[in-house]
Length: 289
Image 1 (cartoon, rainbow, N blue to C red):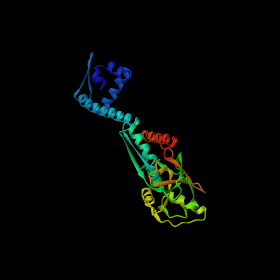
Image 2: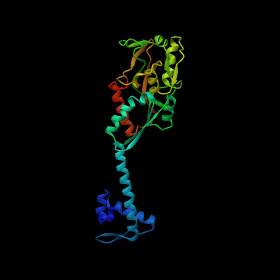
Image 3: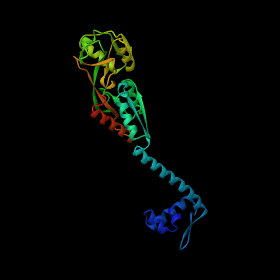
Image 4: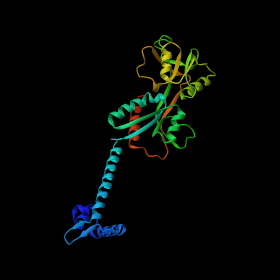
């Protein structure tokens, strides 16, 4: 292309930062490989042969595609395009992650965000299969192929209908909670496992009045006076619905360490790196806890 556009070997060599002998050798080798003459050489100018014209069209198309590809790669690196997939526990997907996605999308509107919410085992599976760029969950023992970065400490709290306890009351013991109908999360959820462990430490095994898979269902049942629920603080709104009361649970106080989980040795995509930065910023500000 350079020789065709510049018209001389010397000008073309200068343009592509080669010596003239080196460029002449490259052209000679190319002509030998193709068994075709590409240029008519005169003392003053170089002109393309018919074969040279044919190759020039191909070269322009190929180099144009490379330039376009590099341009798209720059857009990808600067998050002007791309995709990030996050696997998360439902309690985090509806709380901190939703807030992070909103701020991320305001800054990077052309990056597609995909959320895979599910129970802890499904979250880890999405990460291990490569379906998710990273996950929000727990650092599980024995998962040596995963790297965990602490995001926040989440606390289990009780949610009750107003009027059941004093309006000024802020805390509730697990033993007192067991005296009332319990709306429990499904057995395959991390919240249920933590709830059962807390009761077990006290030698208690209350029979739930209801078992539900979604926290919105639990809140609706509480609001209708069907019992109390144990939910993670990260999943609850800062301002509770008028009919509900949030109570800190103690004796024991149950916390879980929420982490950003990634596959060991994998480089973050630009979009994933930016999303993680948004999550860390929100967590540092105390959001979602």
